[in-house]
Length: 230
Image 1 (cartoon, rainbow, N blue to C red):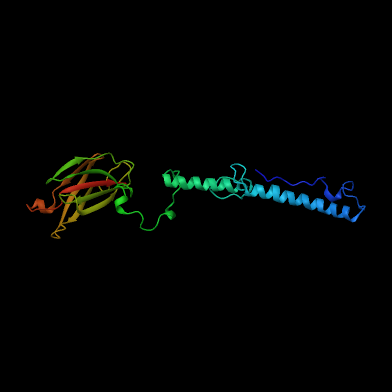
Image 2: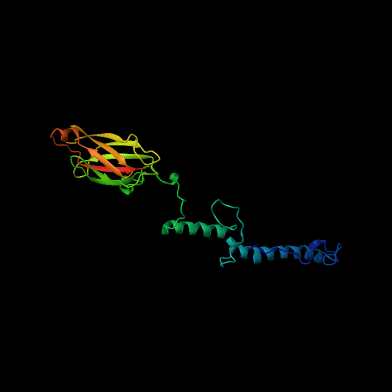
């Protein structure tokens, strides 16, 4: 909405020789000619322009009438329209309704995202199996086609401590390369080294062999296996 434009009466102002004769009949008439134009300017400025600038009426306010250059990611071409859109965006942030993909990494403070807030798959690793290990045996896993790497992770009986791991590539058929891997671990309490041998029998089956300690009748802490892919 634009401001009301001023117009002289008559439209051509002092150039109108009928309203403003070139040679006034008296000093009073000459003054009246000049004053008439000045009064029209005063009336417009005080009675129209300033009133429109100061107006706070919705749809008729000064901010509704003042144009504003485009601002990136802000809608509107008047001061009020742009302020209203900025407020909407702030409200959206407060209400948790930000459009998808609008928060960038630069907006996050260093250290703002902690481990406790991350999902177990947040770093691209997806858990495909977890279970207890006997002396030897095997277990079924989900098909691994479409993944590039597998991580075999050994943990203690409580699953609270990772005792060892190995990361291996996967072929296009989802098979581990090489098909057998020795995963070395370390007892967190004694520091003793131990291992398990894992072999991919098929794209959905994993077999494991005895560790060195168990094969000689010893006791090992390598009791649980966790498999992740990405």
